[in-house]
Image 1 (cartoon, protein in one colour):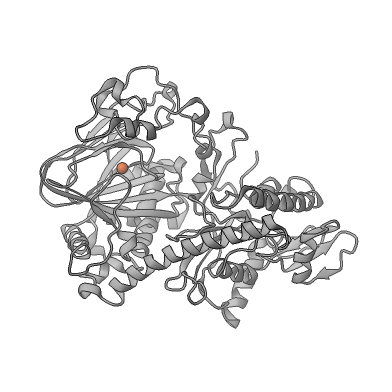
Image 2 (cartoon, helix red, strand yellow):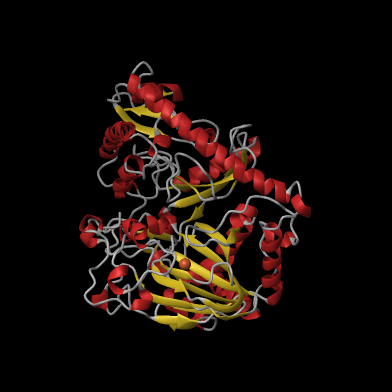
Length: 587
Ligand SMILES: [Fe+2]
């Protein structure tokens, strides 16, 4: 059995097969991949195959030395005593990952998703840091949340780097991982280089870049240090990464220019976003926030949460402090809180009337002419509402995710990364006569979704659930387009489901409804084969009309008439379900 972190196979993958930004010219990516692959494969061989023999120690030369986490702790202590690099606001202590991914090995074995970490002593360890870019870089107004994940091969393997906060950047992919270009020696220099023939000889950092750009023969190992990683992360926010190659080569020069333009465009977009938040929170546009408690990075006050929820969370905290609970025990506690509406769909009391009222007041104020700032709408389907991350609540929702939502999701959806949620897209949707009345069937760009009703007064307006996309029908799961549940919203109550669970908002009959929705993503789940190779099984029976989507289903017109004022032909050309043969594998 091979685990995704901490072994040689992962080492090669982590450096040479990182997700690629869609914007980088493919030939450049290939060149970087090839260069790194040759270098890292040699390193892997030098370490003795699959790396298991190195368990617990960061060195392989037979000399007992510090383990990866000992190295990290020592480096962090030094950084804190001498001062963090410029632009680095904070660095946390290493935190052992409680969940890891289990690779399936091939698309046909891709059943492995997120599993509890089988050996907490061998990492990986996450270090979180808030970093801002240089002045006028576009990333200088607000610090960016980095997560560095270190395997037990550190310092001879660089950490995986994710940007968990909302950040417009040309070289961060949809799953929050930075481009493989980040790890090129010209962008992330190693601290030390060791040579096969002269083991004792250690070269300085500048030689590493020189060596890797030409002849890398004789390299036995590279070693990294946290300071260099932090400096490289700040540089990532301050200027475009260097594309390796000869500047006199026209193609290289072209790619550098292209990347520079894309970098600048994303940086400008990021700065505009931060400006809007600053105008509201710092410059107090329109008087600023109505309730500053909603924006606190230390979380919303206790009086915002239902007492039953607080009791259950306290019970979980107490029991986890004694020893990590197994799934069954965790689920038993959560059962005291959640009502199972249907398989995979749960609801629970979450927010008090005070919290609902505060959120509605804040959203309405932010959207008003008095404040007069650009309002970002929730997504491509909701025309009304506000993305609350874009009005300055992101850090508060970080707290909500870590301290409340994740604890519930850990029990309900462990296989999809419920216990290791890392980022979110959070928004309030609004349904009202004259605005949107309901929402077409869809799945969310989320691994786990939480949807809490805030009010106001309304009639009808529930959620219709169908099946989970990719669920195995042979194992008794409902088909994707068969009705499984009708859920009626209650003010203050939250419904939880997988993002892949097809659902739609029924039309409102009367009144107005606002809901707080948090789309949660898990970078651990998204790195797993279970996520990457999700199958979309063929339908064996006709879909339920209620589960059809005029936006997403190519065959909608076969079963139903398109709604009035909808261009069926245009929608059909963009629809994707059922997927074509070549896209049956979703990634
Ligand atoms: Fe949704």
